[in-house]
Length: 327
Image (cartoon, rainbow, N blue to C red; front, side, top):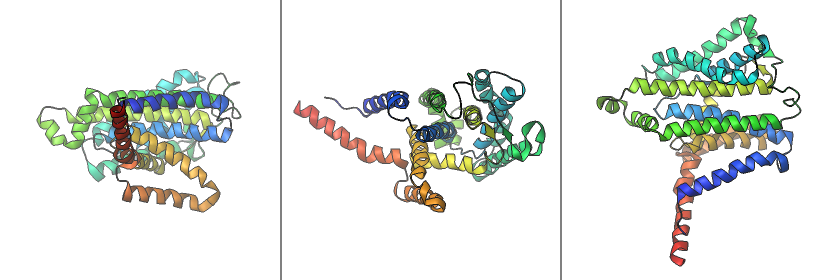
């Protein structure tokens, strides 16, 4: 019996996807648990989009701003103009992607802490614009009573199962697209830019072009996550899409592991789920969250996925080789 880590991963990923699609019918029927998984979907979409940009060595603190733009786009189109939600989903990604083109052209000219500051300033600028104009953006109070997806009789606040399946589909599409990009020639080029953008430029790679492409794709999927958030909670506000949301997205990637695509997925899932177990601790909930982050940075620098790759998968490989010899 031949063991392959790749086949092992595909096998369990397929089983997990099947389980998640049938779980609301038999296992996960509690609305609270469904809500937790819905929040996981939002966080996974955000962390996966930022991860693609991080493969170039750039970390954007403006992802919450793109998410806010996507949420505002679909909200205004659906609530004010009466457009169908299903038409607004791609538009909610296209609009922030278009905005990210001039923003990206400016940001990719700089590196390091300056890139952090400029993208953070962009996120705060978006919040400031939406907060300043009471019409049509709702000001600091935001916009309430955002219509849910159609049919409205199915997508109701008391019925989270349709939102669950919508979130699963959007998350799977997001992850599949970003994974395919990361495994393509473009993805390999992005990793080479991370290793040394000067070396990549010296052999003819258009570094700015590839960085801008990653920046735009990250903005697109952040907008998709934003529209899902808006129509699930039926409320958006500048008080929601803050700098801390972008920071948390970075934390998901660090805890899960930057060096693998599954890292941001695992990190977002774990750090969405774990704090809920400590909700009863009240004010100490965030302290526990911080301790988890510090523990990861000190003892698991390559993240959870890196730990599994270094400790667990080698054991499974050895077990598979022993089984092959026995056979």
